[in-house]
Length: 391
Image (tube, rainbow, N blue to C red):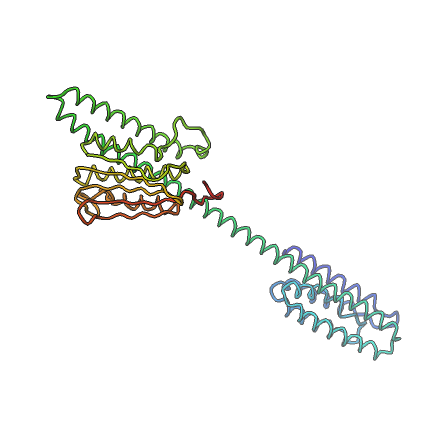
C-alpha cells in the first residue's frame, strides 16, 4: 500500500506539471516552477490520504484553487481531485466527497462562464468532469462495499470454524465422559462381585473345596467379561473410527439383566426378577443404559447396602420401559451403608441419572418407607439422536 501511494504521488506531481504547461497559451505566462510546486504539494498530500481522507481532499482543493488564482494558466480542479475523492468514498464518506465534488464543479463552471467561453464548450466540459467525479465516487464506494463484504465473510467463516471447533471439543468430551462412565460401571461391578466371591471362596476352601472352586471359576468368568468390556472401551479411545468397526461381541443390554442377578446371588443375596408387559425390541442404546443402571444399582447393593435381598422389575409400556431395583438394606442416601442408588465415590447416582436423562428419560432414587432403597428409571422406546429418531 505504501509503495502504491508513492507511485500515485509521483504520477500526480508529474501530471500536474505537464498539464499546467500544456494549458498555457503561446503568448501567456509560463511558470514551470509554480506548476512543479503544485505537483509536489498535491502529490505529497496523497501520501497521507488513507489516514486523513477528508482533510487531504480539502487541502488538495485549496492548493489547486490557490494556484488558479495566481494568474498562471489554470487547470480543471476536478481531475486532480479524483484520487482524493475515491479515497474519501472508500473511507465510507461518500456524501462528503459528493458535496465537495459538486461544489467544486459548480465553482469551476461559473469561473469558466465568466471567462466568456462558449456555453456548449462549458456544457461539454462540465459533463465530462461530472462523469469523472461520479466514476471516482462510485469506484470508491464499490471497493468499500466489496472490502466490507469480504471482512464479513471472513468473520462469519472464522465464527463458524470456532463454533465447529467448540462443537467438536464438546462431542469429544461427551464421548470421553461416556467411556469413562462405562469403565467405572464395569470396574466397580467387577471389583465388588469378584471381591465377595473371593472372600466366600477363602472361607469355604477348607471345609467345602468344590464350592470354593465354583466361586473361583465364577470370579474368573466375571473377570474375563470385565476385561473384554474394558478392551472394547480402550479400543474406542484409541481408534477414532472404532464405532464403525465390527466387535467380537455385542454390548450388554436388557436381555442380560438376569446375569447381574446371578452374580448377586453368588455374592450371597436373595434375588428376584419380574417382568411386566409384552417384551418389545429396544434400541441398543436404551438396552445398554438399562443394563448399566441395573449394574450400578446391584453393585452398590453388594458393596454398601448391607442387604439380604434385591429385586429387579422390568415393565414394558407403550411409550417406554421402566426399570425398578429394590433392596432391603440400610437405605442410606450415599456412601457406605447406602442403598442401591449410592456409590462409595459419590458418582454412581449422578452417572445413572445422566445416562437416563441423556436419552430423554428420568431416574428417581431414594429410601423406601419400610426400609431399603429403590432406584426407578424410565426410558423412552424412541430416542432423539444426532441423525434423527432411533426406534
